[in-house]
Amino acid sequence: MMSALRRSLPRIPSVWKPVRSQQTWTPIRHFSGSPIPRASWGFVGLGQMGYPMARNLRAKIPATDSMTIYDINESATSQFVEEANGAGAGASVTIAKSLQDVSRDSDTVITMLPQPKHVQAVYEEFIAGGLDNTTPRLFIDCSTIDVKTSLEVGSAIRVLGHDFVDAPVSGGVVGATAATLTFMLGASNAVVGKAQPILEKMGKRVIHMGEPGTGIVGKLANNYLLAMNNLATAEAMNFGIKLGLDAKTLASLINCSTGKCWPSEVNNPVPGVIEGAPSSRGYQGGFGVSLMAKDLKLAIAAAELADAKLVLAEPAQKLYEGAEAHDDCKGRDFSVVYKYLQVADK
Ligand code: NAD
Image (cartoon, rainbow, N blue to C red; front, side, top):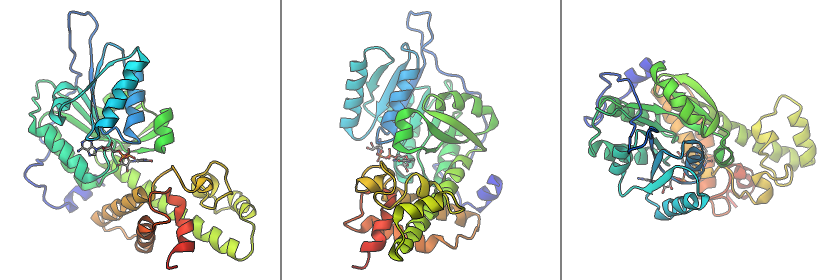
């Protein structure tokens, strides 16, 4: 499937060259007068997801290892170092002065960034810093981005003799905090054994989807389905309630019938149906409506690469983008589309 995908991709810009060789990865070990080998870790993007992921990673690596972190938001990095120092034990953490310092100083680098343009800019910096291949490194991108950018960045890293895998996640901030994330791994068989134990420090499940790029495809397919289930649940609950049904009774019926899905059962969009769900606390927290609008856009772009028809995509995208822009809905959990059905066009 990925070869079909690659054939349909536009020409790769000259800065991103195709894969020529696959080199065996071994961690860079630093010996500083100590008999214990020291591994070095880099983490870029300490936002809602990256911060708790980096915290879990640090907690599970040997105290003799070192960790270098970087984020354009300096308060995130200084808070992380403060917390790490406060914890006493554990690997030492340093704030990198630049992205180039992260890639130069780390044998494994994990990136968790918002959008394709951020991932592209960060990896361009890594490459501009000079990645000598006498010490092959492993780069793991956990961001949810588009297939094309991920393949291009991966090729550009691999041609320099390093490994790159795509490993987007599912499980949200709760899963990132509890280290229960599911990783969808796109990696050649030779690299799976290196990436998997690292991802298991931050999550519960690692599903190897196939070659590079397939982790992203899996993530986007899942989130497309989630976007539709969420919207369909909101519409079904809305018209049922408007026709006189009690919200909790309707949700109970759906949840023991064939319409049951995660948005109906766990993240029901109607306030008061599920205690603790974002809808029952003013749609605060959870998975932002803007992230869902972004993922839907990326899924549509991925489907276009393979000429796969998505008949539900256009009206759903319009609705999510409408909710994202509406004063009563922006910045809220994506289940706020239920509220948007009430407030739109008013
Ligand atoms: P976020 O916006 O909270 O964090 C992103 C971090 O990246 C920020 O701290 C930002 O300052 C930093 N950053 C941006 N550009 C940078 C650069 N050039 N160099 C260094 N740092 C930079 O986003 P998030 O919620 O943590 O999401 C990260 C990724 O995970 C996204 O791709 C998102 O779609 C995906 N994701 C999010 C969730 C969720 O529930 N939030 C769930 C699954 C997947």
